[in-house]
Length: 281
Image 1 (tube, rainbow, N blue to C red):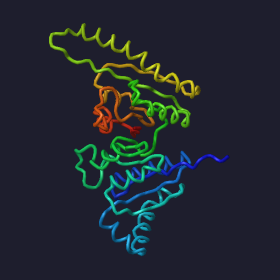
Image 2: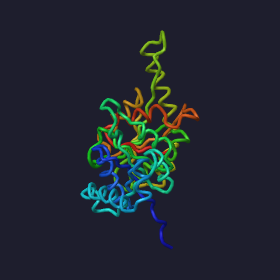
Image 3: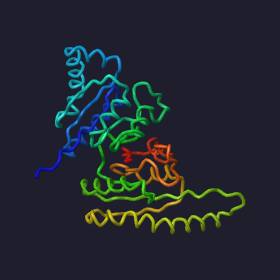
Image 4: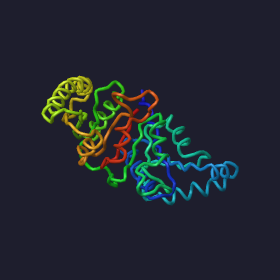
C-alpha cells in the first residue's frame, strides 16, 4: 500500500522582499519534506479580473513564476491568484496543506510594526502548522537544534509531537525550554522569590518530563536537553533559540483563555525570536 500524499506547502506572495524570503523558506521546506509548493497571491480586485479572463490569469501567474523561478526551480510548484483577502485565501488553503509559510511583515507594514495583521490572522486561524519567518531569521535554516517552548499543558501536545518529528528528520537534538516567571510580590525579599522559583521549577520539571516521555520513547534517536529557567518567558525562550534551526511553540498554554487563539508568549516569540517560529495549534 502506497503512503498517503503529503499536503502542499502554502506560501503567500505579495511581491515584497519579506514575501520573497518566505517563498525561499517555503521552497526549501517543501523540498526537504517531499511536498509540492503552492504560492498564492490574494487580491480581491485582481482575483476578480483573472476569474473572468484566462489570458489575464496566465499573465499574472506567469509573472509570479518568473519572479520566483530562482527560488523554486528545484521543487514542484504551482502559482495561483485568488479573489480574497490574504488571510481568507491562506486560511482556506491551509485546510489541505501540510504547512503554511508567511513573512512577519508585508508591503504596507512599518518597520517598527513587528508582526503584520495578515500574519497574525493566518497564525490564529490556519488548520495546519504555520511557519513565520521573523525579521531576525536567517535566509535558510541553520544546522542547529530544534527548540521547543515546553509548558507541559495538554494544549501543547501537538507542538511537542511536531518538534520531535522535525528533530528526528533533521537528525539533530531537541532543546525543550521551560520558563517560569516569578511575580515581584510587594514585601517579598529576593531570597523568598528565589525559593519560590526553585519550588515552582521543581514542580514543573516532573510535569514537563512526563509530557516529553512518550515522545522520547517514539523517537529514541533524538537527544533531548531540558532547560528550566526563571525569567520573562518570551525573552528567555528567544535567548535559548539563538543557535536554533527552528523554534516550535503551541498557540496557547497554561492560563490561555478559550477565546484567545494566540497566547501572549507565542505572540511575543513571533516578534523576538532569532529564527523561524513554527506555531502548531
